[in-house]
Image (cartoon, rainbow, N blue to C red; front, side):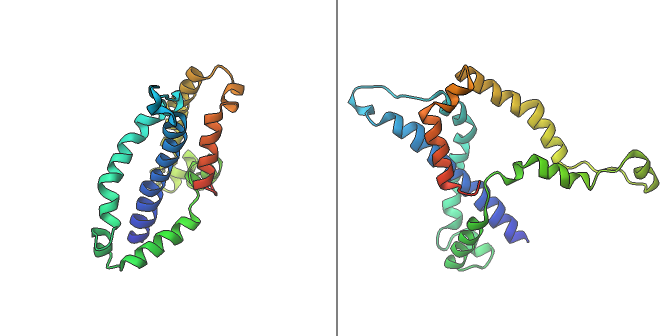
Length: 185
């Protein structure tokens, strides 16, 4: 179980998937908008990329420094779990085939699962049950009170209508790039 959590969840789903996300961001916004950059023009930036950049920049640096050193041949990861390098690569490949990006953001499904753990006040007293405070509950509170207003506010600053978002060729290219690297998410 420890190996599955560390290798499958942490290494693959967090670090390696964010590497793919960063590559899509770079290809869509940094490279495709600046193919003529050295022809005397300055850097062309998308406001969307500028908003996303601070959220992902430090993650890219962390991956540069750590992930390669953890999973390359004879690195720490295979030694800790007594794996041969090809076996580690095969495991990560197998796990990647089942990975669905942002599946933990299915709020309706998570609410349904969470509902099985929530008891009314009388039932908690009769069972001498202290209550259940799940990660889901505080994540929903954070999503509703912090993240959604922030994200919607940023989009509203950049675009004055939904049609401007849906007609932005760079946003379309970003979406298509995400669907290429995360076909099930």
